[in-house]
Image 1 (cartoon, rainbow, N blue to C red):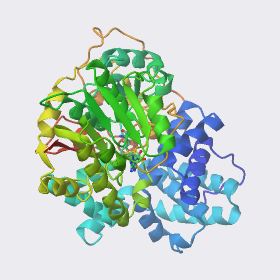
Image 2 (cartoon, rainbow, N blue to C red):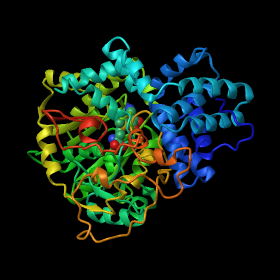
Image 3 (cartoon, rainbow, N blue to C red):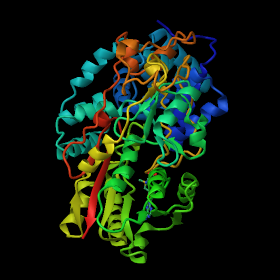
Image 4 (cartoon, rainbow, N blue to C red):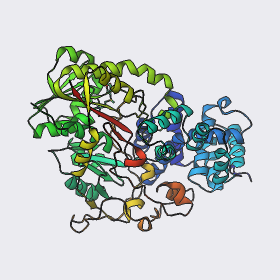
Length: 569
Ligand SMILES: C[S@@+](CC[C@H](N)C(=O)[O-])C[C@H]1O[C@@H](n2cnc3c(N)ncnc32)[C@H](O)[C@@H]1O
């Protein structure tokens, strides 16, 4: 069948996704920066914005898998194709293989878009390749990839990760005593992260933030899984909350919240009056530390080497300026300058970001093994400076949003072996901190999936490692805006966690059209589109073995974070 239509208006959601994907492919742009700008500029309605977000992020995450499937359907190697053609093919593959949009719509719409952005020649070629691709079902393609030889190679193909990343994550899990969890981790890396808010301590109570979020965003808002400061929201634009605009709350992964909270809560002998955040930009953890410091009469110095990022730190702590100072400079100088001055120091080092692959969909294709080696000297020097700036008996928290062994265990074990520091049990402190969380839920149970817009989860957390900062901070409004009414906490005091799957209806608000917006605006999209009940992943406050704290997307629902608490000798 020929899916090429002669005269066809292109779809605004697909066009927005195409534009974002092209900028990522040709300008080294970051999807979490360019897409919100495109959506805002073009004024896409919420459902289209959700669909465009799913298309962009989903296509980028699954790019490796799609490329191997396209390679088997095309006559020319992918790297010999024009970038626009490659992007359009991947976009079509995502609609066919993951969103399971009917071929006439997935191929027809992609070809219509190709006519608009390219010309008739490429459109015909795209039509032919996608048509061949659609002759096999997603399951048949999966079976083919499952037959790939070699365990790492097979996982790389099936779960769409570079092989070296599969190997690095396998090793990291082994060292953490989770050797048999690699498939679960790789799968989790392909799911959109939960949008999580932090209620900054001393500024707003989580339960009050959740109540407001449910009312203003007309969504479901629940307690976090591990952080006592977390509020998970199922949809909506956090920037519409006055608490977010006023820096009392922000979008922040629960793992990042735990890093700051665990460092601040570790038992400490002697004075506890001066804290240092050595690598503070863009300031998410600084702001949480600032809230805790204010309540305890502690002064906090936040240091950041990049001027632009230091400004973002200033923004994030603008309500705490009496006790927080922001310094722009190389953290490595502070060891000498402030030797033994601080009681607690956070050193959240620049890292490969292999723990945040859900949030930065293009990162896995850009990172290279040499990045790890390149970062190692800086990580060691920053840890050395943190240790020097902290008094004997004080605590240094060494953190990364990468589980890579060379960036975590190796760096920390070296400092321990030199006798500079002694490890404390961060897992025990994490259990204590997690025990402070309270259950609450606002909003209607039936909106827990239908209104989530999870497919369009905004991934708006300001990036902390390699990518530039998303200054806009405004999430694309996603998914259905259901008829949630604000109810009192007592009336809606639902158990924490997800609604039962059977209560989670599909996104059918009358806007869903034939090209699968409904399928795209719930997750897991595959399951929904296939008619199966979508099951919410169940995350836990399970922290494994100490002394180092390691959080994982497939266990805790957070980014993969590493925290070592080190007592200075
Ligand atoms: C992982 S990010 C920190 C994230 C931050 N803790 C947060 O939660 O928002 C690492 C930061 O270290 C900064 N950095 C890199 N080299 C540095 C240096 N020599 N001294 C201080 N900061 C540095 C980077 O610019 C980056 O902002």
